[in-house]
Length: 195
Image (cartoon, rainbow, N blue to C red; front, top):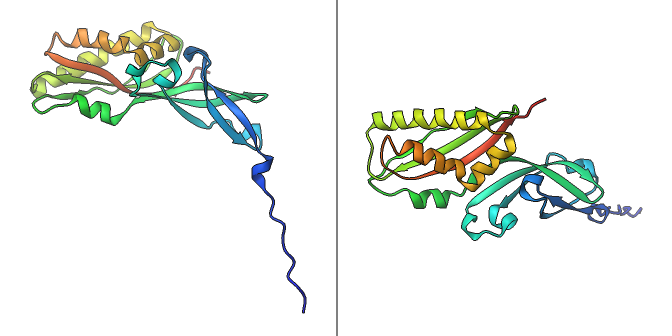
């Protein structure tokens, strides 16, 4: 009786090499993390998330999650590009109270240098607002955001979104319509890059 031949299992884990993932220049080219890969080409288009606290050390921005995508690999370093951000849901829920209105105004904007982004600002009123007031506020926020984006480059816009400068500009513009408690840009996503 013939014995069954044992196949030798190839350990693919030993073939892998570790790569350091770096944030874009806009965020100081800090180390986000490390990842293993057999081939550097397999790293391309991988997505990585990091909080603002991890990149800047600022605990007050713990709730901001930044999204990056690996776009090039040189040696054992993988560089990334910014593809969007999001605010954690628990932070958004903590802002909303009973008797207030939540005004969402998602808008697609284009920067001075040709980038297209979808930006999602959120305004929270002090008291419940009428639907007509909410509609007017939404229109005002969208127009103001388009105007701001058209005057800024991609990097300036991203910096303004992540740091909250643009949200405060929107707040000062929209509070003329109805008293606001807070304005926050809760989400952004890069839709198109210039060719």
